[in-house]
Image (cartoon, rainbow, N blue to C red):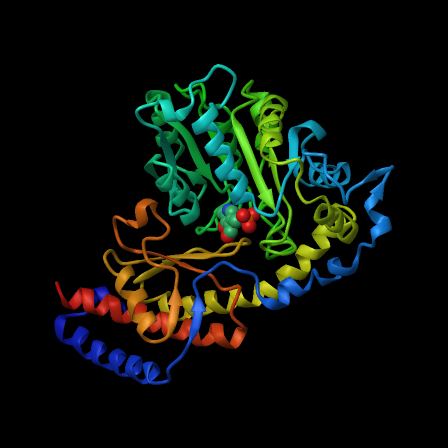
Length: 424
Ligand SMILES: Cc1ncc(COP(=O)(O)O)c(C=O)c1O
């Protein structure tokens, strides 16, 4: 059945039938949550060996006591591990604390207060600062901009990454555009990985603002669900080839490798950018948590150790993604009132309903006991101009909970759509 082809009477009959099913499910008093992109308890337990991997004597390495102050750029062993993993050099990285979002926020705050490079005007002294925000995107990126008074400009995502014609035009014309948010691999929420051409176009940008920077949040860089994962070009290398060494800050963390909130986060950039950031961070802290860095190195050992862990993570997550995707396929492959992404990694499935239906579907889900990410959250200021996008986060619930939540979700999509079609 394709709802958009039905006449009023048929729509009304279908509405009554779906409403009856919905009321029935609502009476069950469910309490399910598909809202946050968190790993499940089973996933975080994979790292519990890390809690006992260190003894006091292990913390003295080459005569340096990691239990004490110092080493603001992070311990050499951790820098080596992340350089190997991310493809950068020792002086192009700082290993920081437990959150990459925290580093992104600090990087922007430093640009606001101190300026991006020697001699550039701190953003706080400018009338206007704008960021390009590929949409749909990550709500917390947008929140940083909103709270710090940075104006946001939406640019659409395509299956290859952000619409690069729009990005190139905007940055070349407007000097108040100082940054762009990017989640280049398994993007939150669309699951898109930027094509090689997109990465090269980013590296070759010639922004009007000399202090424009790409904020390359590579949170899901190794988060493949299948052996055959997407591949992403190394932006740092491409920037060097394009003679644009200082253009990008790259961020990542082990939040979804080991423990969210107790992992290790990194920032990578040109030697010049990293030296400046290191100097500024040194004013802020004498050093990050070196014991946690060492725990990670001891536990994972090397890149192979990290990748083996990611395979275990994928084995837990894959059935959950497949459960949701097969339900969407079953319910909406013919009744084309919903489009969805089919990611090969990351943490999310992004769906588009018919225009004007997302908020209502989320509300109907909530009333039936299924919590979803707020409609609009994937857009700056919480405003989805077409009110159609919803982010599904399948990782946290158990398979049984997810089955129940997905059933409710599909029903609510139908109900919200029928209401909309009947109101015309
Ligand atoms: C795109 C993206 N960046 C950053 C984060 C948060 O990372 P961290 O835990 O390192 O602060 C998340 C968490 O969901 C995310 O989806």
